View 1 (cartoon, rainbow, N blue to C red):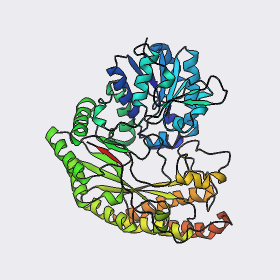
View 2: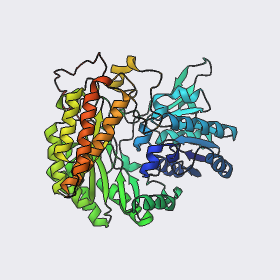
View 3: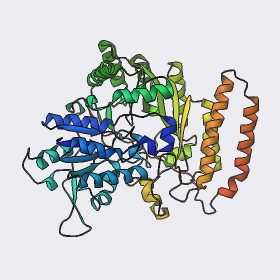
View 4: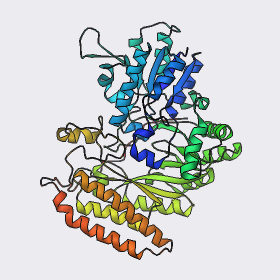
Length: 496
């Protein structure tokens, strides 16, 4: 019998876009939690939903482990978990019912649980673990399994249904995020079927990628960005610890590539420089990809990234309109995006842009500015989405009166407007596809390929979209107007 079974519900098979991309990653947050539970002397199992067909596969796992405690533990480091997709939430609730029927106590943790604990507690979940759940999980498990004394409902970070008042919740005191990340043990990679991931990646892309993190949280103030787990806090592992984890992963799992899943990698250029030294000292170099901000790509940071093995950096560009960036409280400028793109390219690092359309007040002129920026800077790749209001953000409070019955995307390819944006969801989907197509043609042309026919077709498609723009436009759009940018914040840091 297993003491604790950690289970995820991020089934790639249930998300059409993720099936097409075929870039699965193990549930890193659960692997860290497993190591912490093991430090407490508990026997831990893992149900990794990523490569499973659907919730039905969970039944066999329950039968083989016969766990006393099941914790539905979503990966707080994976952007898909942060999107709080309806299909995955439904899967988690189905799995909770299966676990209860098997006689296990059931807890749940993750961004969606933190935002909506009542949705889980009114079903088959007995304990909702909000915010950073690592130590909450360990302390709750110790009490429930008789390894420690105390009341489970008093564990900091736990929410339960109030037994005296139907529909009311009881919140234990909150738990501050861990400040010294090196206190966490290395992730429990032995629980992952690494070869299954290798087969999927190699078949789809010809190489194999795994994931790590160097930080938790983000100290910046973009008003559309949800931060249910770490809030405004930002903590960093030491460069030596990250290099040691990378060396261990390289020796154990032999990845060809690593995705550092941090919201913000390399806040401090000196940290990046030291990381490069530690990687070299341990022979830990593996090509890697990061997510970062344009204003962090200083000459020192870019040099350190190249020395450490960075091959691709995804920049949160978001928009080519300074008006839109200022309205978002992004704290970056169009010029900083251009400089970052040039510096990365000169260092041999692919520069990719995250682009967001549909922010309140964005109209056709601002969309054109974004298209022009992509054409001018020719990023190596783009990821395009639409503004997605999630609880706890300034954006959500601004548009909450416009939200309909549907408040979350079903899957990652949904891209429906949840509020009354300037244009219809159909318009933004066309824009999404056309910008990708436009960039592909221009990059192919820059590489010397004959793209005349496709370029003409793309121009025709842009003309058609512009002609059709008014038919998809709301009549009562409130323009952005002049807006004074918010001052750059004093950053809340917890760093080794």
